[in-house]
View 1 (cartoon, rainbow, N blue to C red):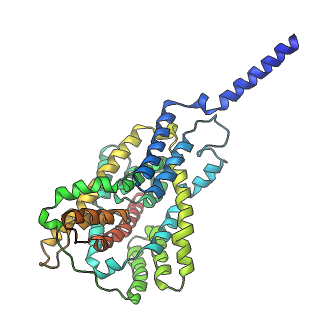
View 2 (cartoon, rainbow, N blue to C red; view 1 turned 45 degrees about the vertical axis):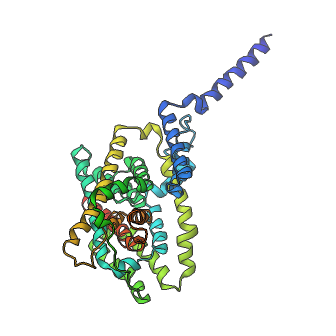
View 3 (cartoon, rainbow, N blue to C red; view 1 turned 30 degrees about the horizontal axis):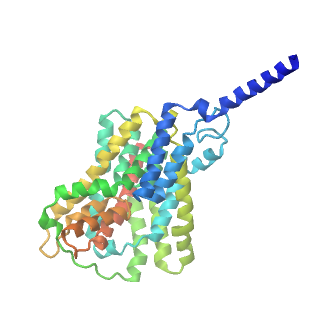
Length: 387
């Protein structure tokens, strides 16, 4: 009889110990909320097709990161020695973003920008959102380094946001990265109302001259000259700008097709999976659900709207100095943010609403790729005086 009681006690104790290690025993309301957020991201990616290449890995990562566990098991992303922690190293040390920029460079055609260089000014104007958010974050009590990392959300550039926050505010990286990628995915929702509000019917139907043909020599020289011009001004941007222009040279030289194909295909896909999953997993409720995170989301929305405003209004201003026939359709001003190619597609879609024969996509790609360069330059500027 005593043996039976001892056995039962043994089983009960081990069952109790087993239950202590399950997620059911460790879950909090915060974990449950974040798991629902992960499902929301996956729903938006699949049902609405909002940036599925980003939101599916991030959404799944959010779910993975919020499966509660007993401390010390070395499974969490913040636990030294865990597999997720090793994969997160590429985010913490800023390894993944330059590799993504290499792939972006290898898949980007800068012809629209080369044929009409003044479009680069639109990309510069759209960076207004970055510096506006930086000032607002300072006003809300964030430190200068935190404010700089938060401000970059206005560039609508996830890799740049991760790179900068890894240097300036690693504790806020999860909130900053999720905010940046969320607003990138919501480009088709956020930008059109602002574009319509700021433009007249007459402005929306402005027809732009077709881009001129760009020679192979120009395409090859562009990444070389672009590298020297931008990195001499902001050497701190070399990791991003250097890889961007290197990837573009691989593409335009035409003699390194295999390397370009690898950079824009398997490599960028692998890095996107790793960065999405680990950034999502970094949103553990215990470290993510804070008032700072909510403030970052609010500032991210503000910066993104200001960036769109800056791009559209800048076109309206320079149109005052351009002759008829040379004017720029202000609907491409939104494309100054670096959400490539989604913001350019928004320019096209909104433009077609008012003139079914006025195709703006090719023109919008100019400021769009300029925005990629502009956000990386802005990140370099932030690093130069905040590090």
